[in-house]
Image (cartoon, rainbow, N blue to C red; front, side, top):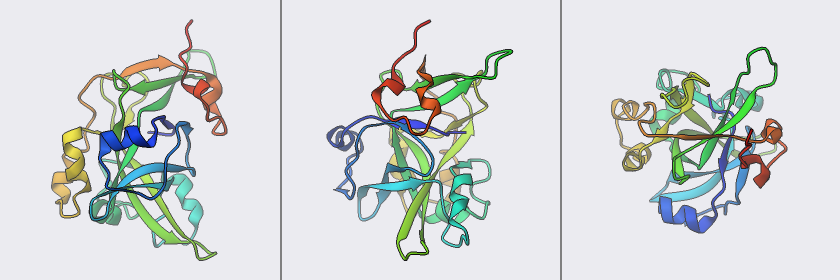
Length: 222
């Protein structure tokens, strides 16, 4: 799964990498993005648009908005069929902007797990495959939310967890956003990341969703 991640770059750096035509919400560096929090995504709307959506997908038909707590991830193997995800998979996909994600490694005989941060080797930003939807809240406000698609872990992650977020290749990002893309073509993009990943142990600060500061990503040396 993907339960926490980072996006520590400023607007200029994101613009240089993702080439969005408009910005509806200016991002700030985030060191521990957690479910229910707003986070930067790129949508397709007459070109690429940067916006902030709530993490945890709330389907348009949902009776209870708390369902978003359970829908932070969508499995690649079933995303095209699951009721909450099949419509967004067909019509409303997004790029979830990140530069790292966290996993926790079990320790034999210990309850506490060791937090790890995974990044690309040069720590450059990347896009995770996402879905989004919108729903009107009881107060009349429109809430737009997203989920991150996960797939089987690659070799770099397999010893820690059996799942990982789908990290799109740069050349596949336009295809993922294309509203005319066929579901079969989209499904072929939902594979384990084929490249290398770097991994460092980080501070237990990340265990708390309230912690969102640079110290969260500092490497712990033993």
